[in-house]
Length: 261
Image (cartoon, rainbow, N blue to C red; front, side):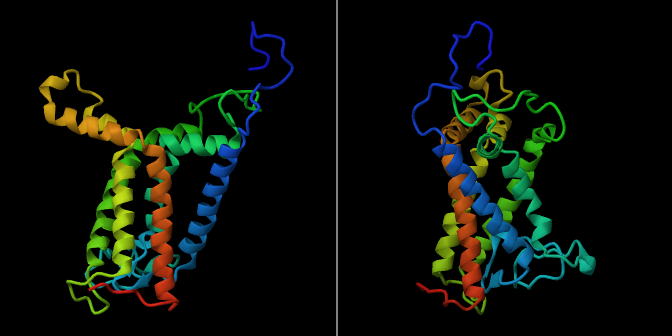
């Protein structure tokens, strides 16, 4: 900090001469673009199903006011009284997982709140309370959103499996949409299991790794993925938007899904 005890008498707020603002600026722009797109798609309540694909924003369906996917994960838990978009029910879980994610915290703290804007650049706020007070203390429920994210990933995996059907629900087919969904679910799983909470659950409390060789190897694997958590966070964010947009294009009749076999 500029006024820290013992600091040299330098008037400048920082000594960085590079374009340090590019990274937080690009981060804010990218996250803002996704928020705008996902909000539009979540509230649109249309064009989210094109047999045999269903948008990851709308799966699983927990209300009875969504289009039916034969054999898909449709659980009408909310009944007919839910009149809004069914995406608003399910998106709270992946959104909560990403919002409380350790990497995303850093991303939007820096990008939107300038807390701090970059390394060696002082933040403009006078006080720092960390995550000890409301609402940021709610970030500590990240581990519970991790469990919910696992369930969502399982459902999306099943949706991807159903993509190996044609529009008449016959098995043994594969289209471009199948590839899009395969890439998306792989990235979602890699992002999910590279989470810090997953790493801690697997091996964070072990006192003697030698007594738990299997969990140690799993912990090491997740640790290697964790090194790429930032890249996986962005890649999976883009892939889920691409998967949704692909279904939107099919549902609006922009083109037909190219089938490979």
